[in-house]
Structure formats: C-alpha cells, structure tokens
Amino acid sequence: MRDSSSLDIAIERDQGKASSIRRPFLRVLPSAITIIPVSMLFGVLAYRADWSMLEVLAAGFLGFTGSGQFALLPLVDTNASFLTMLIVCASINSRYFPIAFTTTKRLPKTFFARTFVSHMLGDEAYATERSGDTVKETLIIRLTIFAFWVVSGVIGAIVAQVIPSAWLTTDIHLGFPASVVLVHLSVSQIKMRVSGIFLMQSVMVLTCLLLATAFYWWLGPTYFWIPSVIMTAVVLDQWKKHE
Amino acid sequence: MSEGVITGIAALLFTSLLVRVLPVVYNFKFPEGLVKWMETILPSAVFLNFIAYIFLQEMRVSAVAALVSLGLTAIMAYLNLGGLFMGVLGGCMSYYLLTTS
Image 1 (tube, rainbow over the protein chains, first blue to last red):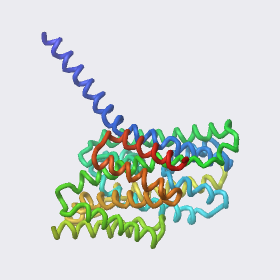
Image 2 (cartoon, rainbow over the protein chains, first blue to last red):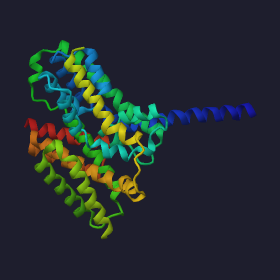
Image 3 (cartoon, rainbow over the protein chains, first blue to last red):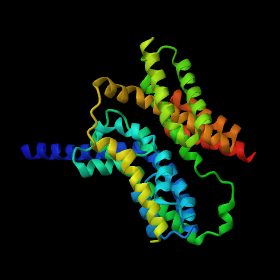
Image 4 (cartoon, each protein chain N blue to C red):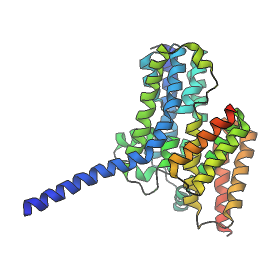
C-alpha cells in the first residue's frame, strides 16, 4: 500500500516536472515559430555576404540580437571599426538596459547562470514572460527563443547554398509575422498591467502612443528608445498620481 | 573566420554585456520608490513604445496594410479573441491579402 502511494507521488512529481517545463514552452512556442523566417533571412544574407557557417552560428549565439545582427552586415562589409559597430549596435539595443532591470527578480542567483539567462533576453521573450514567472519558467522561455533563433540562422545559411539568387529579390516581407506577435503580446501585457490602475485608460494609451510617435519622428527609430520610454513612464506615473 | 566578422561579433557580444548583462549582475543601488517604478510603470512604458515602434516601422513598408492588419491584431488581443494563434493568423492573413490585392 505504501509502495503504491509512493509510486503515485513519484508519478505526480514527474508529471509536475514535465508540466512545469511544457507550460512555459507552449506559451512561448508561437513566438519562437514566428522568428524562424526572420533568423533564416539573416543566415541567407550573411551567407551571401561570404560569412561561413561558423560565423553565422557565432553571431547568433554570442551576438543574439535581431536588429543588431542585420545592422552589422553592411558595417562588416565596409570594414567599419569596432567602435562604430559598438555604437550602432548599442544604440539599436539600448532599450534592453531598462528592460533588463525589470527582470532581475526572475533570474538565477549564480553569476554565470545569471549572465547567460540575461544574455538570452529578447523582445519576444520579455513580452511572453510574466512578473510572477519562476526562474525555471524564465529560463525555458528565453532558451526556446534563443535556440530557435540560433538554429534558424544556421539553417538559413544552409538554405542559401541551394536556393537560386533570384528568389531573394522577391518582395516577401519575412519579418511581418514577428511584428504581429510583438503587437499581440504587447497589447495583452498593457491590458493586464494598466487595468484598474489608471482612469481614462484609452486616453492615457493614446497619449503615450502619440508621445512615442513624436519621439520616433524627432529622433529616428535608432535613438528614440531611451528618451521616449522615460518620458512615457513619466506620463504614466503622473497619470496614476492624478487619478 | 575573417577579421571583420570577428570584430562584428565582438561588438554584438560587448553590446549584449552592456545593455543586458550589466544591469542584472552589477548591484545598482536605487531608492525603493525607483525600484517599484521600474517594476510597475517602466514595463508598461516599454510595451507602449514597442507598439508605436512596430506600427511606424511596418507602415514604412506598407502603410495601409500594416495599419489595418496590426490594428486588427491589437483589437483581437484587447478583446482576447482566439488567443495568440488566431490573432497572429488574422494579422498575417489580412496583411497578405492587402499587399497582394
């Protein structure tokens, strides 16, 4: 009898472990699938720019950043300096600085694990994560996106060897599904976060979107992030205080 | 590996260390109010900027198609119609139809 109940407990524990892995994996899977064509496109373009498979793999693994990787291709082609590349990449990805701050509580405590998991932070992962997620759930979400991105890039480079060059000149917009996913996740997150906190929520959202648009037109898509995010946060803070 | 590519990958890695790793491994001492602000207000500000950025970037490629299809996705997400899969499917299908018609 005791053996039977021990077995039941062991099975339940195993099921619980499987479920704790499966749930965050299934949550992030749609986002991971939509980034496949984008990453494959990077692999294709890098291969066409005479990058080797190892270089495509290293760029995805060590330099995991969608827009930064694409921006790097012409810079490498023109033999730009390290400093130039760093300034461009850091400017494009500066949004991660404040984003990373907000995720510290769901990261591992040990230095190397914390470093690796924070390196795997991406837009899609951040939009999928929830503030109550455990370290394990955060790891699974980020690792899934990261693995899909790195592997898809290499597959793209392999595909580039066999597909005719003319196919690459078509007007297919491969990045659109990833944009759609980010919009969906962002709207869901905002709905969850602002509900019950602000009065006149529609007006508040519209004001913030107009503010971000103004910064985008004023400073451009590369440099608008930090000032725009800070000003939007100030507006949200004031809106909350004056309700 | 060519020198230019190694330099590029090093720049990407250093960028990641600067913008993603540094904020979480260095023990920045912030006042409690600021920490609460970063945990509650800042993420909402980031997501609102995500939305504005994606709309504006995609509208540079195809203004009407992007506005309609991303707007449809946003409405489906807000009303919680069909979950993420249906929202993405609706957005991509409408974009495809509008850009190919």
